[in-house]
Amino acid sequence: MTVARAFLPDLIAPPLLGVAMIPLQTPDLTPEKLGVMLLRDGTIQPHDMVQALALLASRGGRLTDILLARGMVAETTLYQSLAAHWGVGLANLSHPPDARLIDAFGASDCLRHSILPWRKAGGATVIVTAYPEDFEPHRPRLTALFGALVLAVAPARQIESAVLAVRGPALASLAETRVPESESCRHFRAETLRVPIFLMALTVLVAALLAPAAVLIGMTVLATFCMLAFSMLKLAAWMSLLCPPPPVLPPPHPPPDTALPTVSVMVALYKEGNIAPRLVKRLGLLDYPQELLEVLLVVEAEDHQTRSALDGADLPPWMRVVAVPAGRVKTKPRALNFALDHCHGSIVGVYDAEDAPAPDQIRRIVDRFLSATPDLACVQAMLDYYNPHTNWLARCFTIEYAAWFRQFLPGLERLGMVVPLGGTSLFFRRDHLERLGRWDAHNVTEDADLGIRLARHGLRTEVIASVTMEEANCRALPWIKQRSRWSKGFMMTWLTHMRDPRLLWRQLGPRRFVGVQVLVLGSILQSLLAPLLWSFWLVPLGVPHPMVTALSPPAFTALYLTFFATTALTIAFDIAALRRTGHRLSPLWVPTLIFYHPLASFAAYKALWELLTRPFYWDKTSHGLFD
Image (cartoon, rainbow, N blue to C red; front, side, top):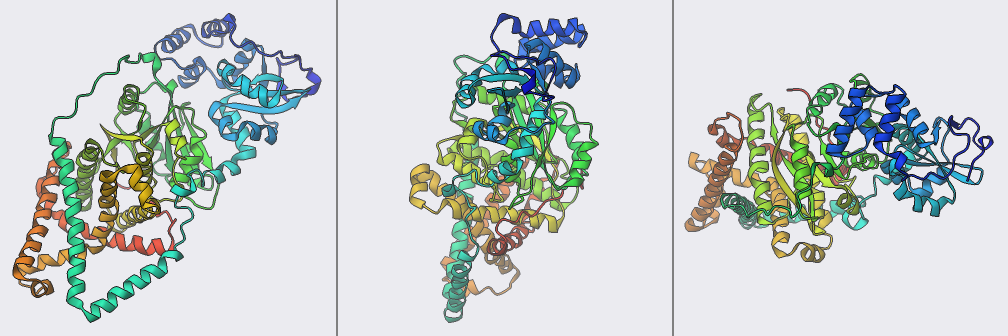
């Protein structure tokens, strides 16, 4: 079938005067033939083409991506040559597409595959693609939707811009509701909790006035139980790491280098104008093949500060900016949901603005995915801080992160328990992530929530011994704000997943169900009730304590020994974790965390207040202050 030029006035640049249905699998359309044509036209230098073809042979991917990622040819020149090579038109996408055609194919699929059903012309539909060599698998679906097809080419960035121009707001709205209602907190209403919590507080107050000793004993026992349960979970995690690891059998057919997948990395930025250039430099140290790596710098459309900084950052071809249109909420998970539609990789990762990942991290994670069973959905790298010596708060935060990422999470994984994810240095099999509905856009600890959802659906998370360095938040007020967001997210996550406890029990099993209660609910209650336990430090100083008279001497002694035993276990746990790092921090700093943990209680009470007043508010953490 041929389309006359009269049907496409100025919409497709030459050479399209008439285009037949494209036979995409003819022998003449190989990368080598394309390379010969580019050399003949003088588009690329011979030594560059030799290098590009060698990379293609050893690593796979697309020749066009290699040429652009390595800066071997200008984008416009390359696509002019591609149009001539394939015998198709070069689309002029300054003319808007037909939104109805995009809706029929799906805007998300348009972005993911860089395919744009553009215009009707003479009884055919013009399909614009950035990768004509990958068009054939999509031909049956497109033909079923649109009938006769005419192919044209355009750069992926232009296709993305054309789709977003007509469907960007709709995709931004969809980003808020990706997770199924039954597993999302988006319909949470703070007012539904206010009355129950008010009545509970009133009941405790009245009971305290009528029977103060009984209330004090009850709350102290509850606080001690939470502390003891959490300590036992930590001890089990620690002991599991001291045992020999289970043997890891090599895959039956180790994949060759040519099987390396494309990896997409998203970095959500908001008001990060001072850190954007350093971020670009750090991510530039990643040694994964550039032609198989894309980094998406995700910014809010209204964040002119960050966008201006990125405009002046001289981004390499494999990095690009994705602007997120305004919506009802402004959260990191919403931005990630929107940006995921722009990703082309089968493995998707997340970094934070201040991250400095190990250069070989992505390659190690890819190797783990390629050698693992299909139920491995997520790989979590370890997090650490590059400014532990800034002040006392930074030292304490560094010790806490060492305990969490180097001992507690790996131990939970070894025990087969639910692993609550960290917010960064996470990598997913994209298909699993899509199937689960991506991130909950309304949850301010979308990482912990996603970790539980992965486990509920029978998928695994592994912690890999690759480190990403971050900046420790070492100012008291910003620290409390950040921790209150984490605590509020834990509260929201527990309320969401406990809507149907019996279903959660069936999905996780008894052991992991109990583990989630200890990990999520237990840590919340422990932070809220901790002041009761801190008062026991006054007893050795001779300060009268009401529990001394409220309990019998043996009971008080047992309670006091439990308190000191769990404190000693925590100190030993933290010292052991600190030794797993390369930091030259004295273990004598570890006992000073006794004065650090009260900040978490302040944050927990702030979190509870915000849960009842501003449940979806994202308290932003500033970065780049102590870099």
